[in-house]
Image 1 (tube, helix red, strand yellow):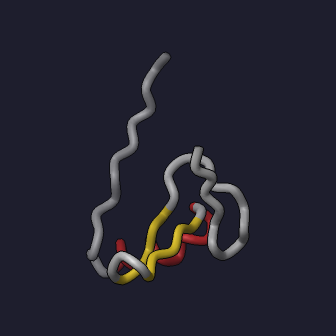
Image 2 (cartoon, rainbow, N blue to C red; image 1 turned 45 degrees about the horizontal axis):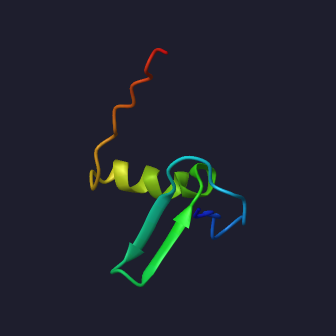
Length: 58
């Protein structure tokens, strides 16, 4: 079992982490709160598109 912690705030990440970095060895994993400024910058400059998240009914 792999436990992922945010590299900034040290909280355990539940769900999918936000991975940022250059290359394979200089990556960091962030929680949604800490990664929000990075995602905002990338969306603003159109480096990434917003993902459409659909909730499944159970």
